[in-house]
Structure formats: C-alpha cells, structure tokens
Length: 81
Length: 150
Image (tube, rainbow over all chains, first blue to last red; front, side, top):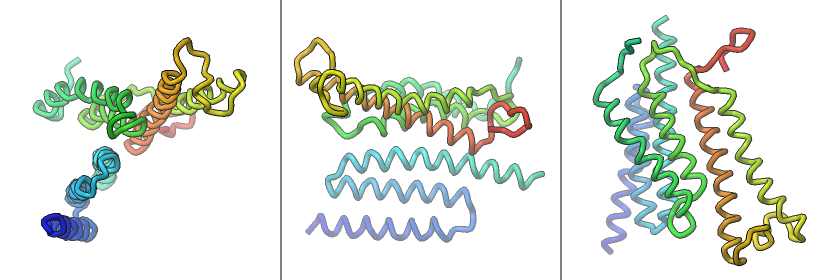
C-alpha cells in the first residue's frame, strides 16, 4: 500500500515537472526543469527495481543538460549581434 | 598569458571533480558486469570529464581542440569491437565467440576478457561521439579551408 501511494505521488510530480518544462517560455529554466524531471524519473525507476535503467537515465540527463546549456549560449550569442 | 576565469568556485569544484569522474568511469567500465553500468555509461561519464572543461572555459579564450582527432577516436571504438569479434574466426569459432580467443587463460576467463575488450570499444566510441557532438554544438575547433567551423 505504501509502495502504491509513493509511486503515485512520484508519477504526479513527474507529470507536473514535465508539463512545466514543456510550457515554460524561458529556455534556461526549461532546461533546469527538465533535469528535475529526469531526477524524479530516476527515483521512479529505482522504486520499480530497475537500477540499470536508472543509472543510464541519470547519466543521460547530465549530458543532455550540458548540451542544452551550450546550445542556449550559442542562441544568445546570435541575439546580441 | 593571463586568462579570465568564468568563476573561481566552479573552477575549484571542477579540479576536485575531474579525478573522481575519471576513476568512477573506469570503475563503471570494469565492474559493469556485476553491478549496474557498462560501456555506454562509462563512456558518458568519461566524456563528462572532458566536457566540463569546455563548459567552464570563458568565451574569449582561443580554442585549440583536436576536433578531427575526436572523430577519428570515435571510429576507433567500433574498430576495436570488430577486431575482437573477427579474432575468433581464424581459430575456428563464430563471430564474437569469446571462448576461442587466443589468450593463455582458462575458457571462463577468456569470456571475461572478450567482454572487457568489447566494452572498451563501446566506451571509446560513445565518449568520442559525445565530445564531437558537443564541439559541433558549440562551434569550436579549427576552421577548414573554406572558413567553416567543423
């Protein structure tokens, strides 16, 4: 019972963070919220006893936030010129 | 030459973090058979150690990265994978049959070494590909003869 309650709460948080990350107009905040989203996805994978998938998701979220940061930096460079 | 730093706190944190990242990447690669991890995750962690330097570098520093050599290294990973697979064919096995690799150890250990070589190939390929994608996103590297950045 405790498991079901905790997993439902986690899925609700995942849904809320994902929706905010999609509909936020600011690009950098959207990237940060995406990393929060994937952190909760990692917790959900760990709860469902899939540590291998959780590890891959954590590593991939770190590398994708690095990609977003460098792409947003390039976009702002284009705005200034 | 005096260089501007983006942030002294991030610089110090980076210097403390990079040995931990490299050791943890190698640990994930070698111990990936018994615990979560493997070639892909180890490659991403090792690439992260290189990418952190490029994120933290100030924008006005002259970049001197080996862009073409990164792509060559990304090709070396699949070559290691393919050579390990093909090496068992002259000794009478199929492609990737680790038990017939020409190593002077027991057959069970031959399986372990064969999987380790495969994982090293995957790690090199993933690491160099991620660094190369990052360089292309940030448009760094030497311009070619037409002036385009790779």
